[in-house]
Amino acid sequence: MFQNGNGTAGRGDTFEALSRIGADVAFERVSSVADCVERASREEVDLVVVDRGGPCIHAEVLAALAAESPPVVVVVAVDDDEDDALDAFRCGAADCVRAAHDYAEVLPVVALEQIRRWRQLRERRAAHRRIDWLERYNDNIIQSINSALVVVNRDGRITFANPTAGHILGCRAGDLGDRPVADWFTGGDDGPALITRTLEEGVRFKGAETMITLADGTLTPIGISCTPLLDESGEILGAVAIFQDLSEIKQLQRQVLQQEKMASIGQLAAGVAHEINNPMGFIHANLYQMSEYLQDMEGWFGAVDGLQRAAEAGDAEAVSAASQRLAEIAREIDVDYVRADFKKAVRESQEGSERIRHIVKDLREFSHQGSSERMLADVNQCVDSTANIVWTMMKHSVILEKEYADLPEISCYPMQLKQVFMNLLVNAYQAIEERQAEGDREPGVIRIVSSQRSGGVLVSISDTGIGIAETDLQRIFDPFFTTKEVGTGTGLGLSTSYGIVKRHGGTMNVASEIDRGSTFDVWLPFKPPDDMPPG
Image (cartoon, rainbow, N blue to C red; front, side, top):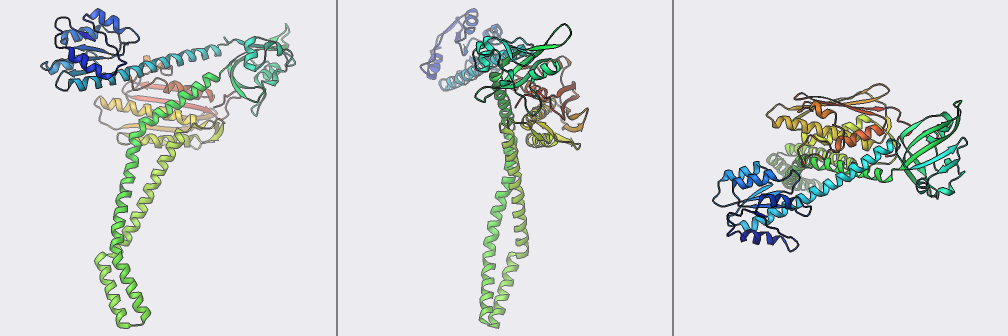
């Protein structure tokens, strides 16, 4: 806690207020800006409190602290000007507390909230560093800098394997000699194993992904580079395979993908709640109206019963009286209107409940982990069902245009493709929101177009948003790169989407112009690559 050395009398109320946080919180008091900066650089410091130092001191402390320093809460005196607090915020204070009558209650609440946010931010940074490290590791795999190595002869038998290869394949390296490589590298419906193709066709693979089968039947994902061994005449003598276990990276990718999906759903929650509340509102109103109609109809039903009893008795006079009574009640309650409106209320309620059912179904499908097996899927359906979910949050400020061509089904992982389209649509909406926040009151336009192109399916998603600067376009698909404000984007959405499209054998490109909007093109081949990794 920083307290100006020029006057610290009466500041015990700050320590007393902060002490309410709990016994596991330690405080350090400093009286110079240099000491404050030095202490704030320590990893264990979660919060800096600048206690009534005055505008100049506040500005000096905030300017001296590094960008990644803990949050700063500024305490201003009761008689300080309101502009002092505003100046503190402008200089970078996380919060500002006035030392008023409720100071002892307000300060610990504010401090706890800022400490919680800071610790969450530190945890996210640590997680991002770990993911960044693993991504670099995966890149090294693609560049064939791997430690597991096997050499096979022309007959497909192992002649050399290092200890890491033995570990991955589930044996000691010394036990691998003369074993058929096909014991682990098996083919499938898509064709022979990669090493087999290298031996038979001389095909080279660099950074490919495939599966190996262990002795217990377990499938393990690996990244592999394969090169044929040739004699002087170009005859194939064997092959060298360098590979790495991708199990941990694949698990991390699945976790990141699921987290991105759930984060997207979190952004949609308010819109979905509103979308569900609308039909629920008129369903509730209709049920109330139908209840009143039933009460009105009770008298009419009673008169019908009376008429029936009179008819059964064969009393003509009683029948006439009962008939007149039935007609009077029918006029009083306007039975024709009640009957027609009752049917209308039932029909509207059915339509509302069906709308709610569709919303819940779309959300449930989108949040589902998805199948680990490839399947034939309609890309139009993937993008359209995703657009229906996103529409709930953008409908009041965006015009959504769709133009779908007749497309054949493609072999893919549909839930992963829905994640790609979700990221692109949410980004398009946010770009429009950003432009509108700068004063543009015109509704934005998001346009979805699908077509057949170059042996595959092309889906283009365009927006009239703020656009992307040319300098940012070069990095837009890099992990953790984001043009959004801190706390708004993780920088993983487009990177994850790019990886999904690439694993499908497709491409993703972007064209953008500041203040004009952006267009993202996703191209997916009709036939996926033979070495397309599992989902």
